[in-house]
Image (tube, rainbow, N blue to C red; front, side):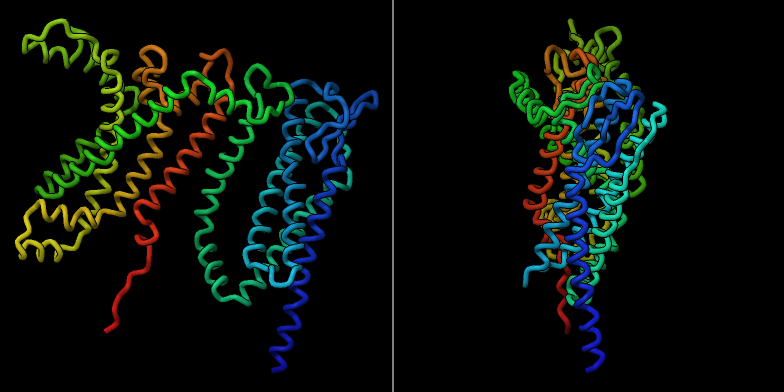
Length: 475
């Protein structure tokens, strides 16, 4: 009994410290809004102040143009500090209210602290590099040190809340153990997906291009999105994208892949392996070589292989087939590559079906079509979900073969898809300059479309039912 009281007496102050640490960290970080804590002292006593609000306290002309723009952009990342402070203050206040404490508050505080620390440190390092390059003395006041101290307090407070919740709630401790197990994969997702998507969105709110790269960023809000949706070719590009994805996915990446898997799984193992190996050749062929092969196939006489075959049957005046039927070749070129991926996945899933089910069905008089309809296809729901989702996202962002084959033509935007448009706006000079911000707006909308389609697939295929624990009756 004494031990329990002692443990209780120890746990209560810890919980209080966690909440008070969040409040203290929040107040300190919110001070970053009004304090210009990092200053660059320049000759003639002119000052260019880098405030944690991202605002300049004096003219930026005192530093060379390129470095001045970089200084201004790096100051933007310091906005993460007051944002983290507001979140920490809110979490601390919520946890002080009776009955409002939640175990996930501590985890959220830890994630916010780590993210803000990385952002602030990166901006500080960039600012120091500019100062050294410009031979400018750096006046690092106490404020920046206090900012890092506050972020450390936010991290410690979140860890204390996590420890409290894991000790009092076994269910949360189990969930925390699962998160620890998934931490490496989650870190990769955050670093290579969520952070790039966030940077893409931030970039889309500016007017950054090669014409003004050396100047400070100008935040234009949602002007790039308004410009995108008002583009007269926007409906055509959107229609091209869905047409490209649906046709390629339906007829090749899933349809033909499933057909090839069913055929090769019901023949001799050696023959099936050789046949699947042939279908993998387009995937392992370099893109440029692969496209040149298709161009040679569709070329005008006497060079085109297809026209040479047609000439044997007396067909005259054969055209150059790619400009005549561009969508046919776009779908074929991408489909022959995409079908091999689904074929491998489906074949592996078919071969993993227990032989007892097949034997029992044949004993009951089931034919091959009945086996496929009643046993094979129902057991392929999970591989189908994976292939459909993966290939949809892959097709949404793929434009390499279209760029090499038709470059979005012939004509204006005939075969141009969304990803190719984003690439051209951002990284080609076809539109006058590299409009990185405008291309980022196209790219971010594509990210949203992919996320919506992924959630839709998970609901349609009933993902929760697929991953639920097996129900085994205990005899």
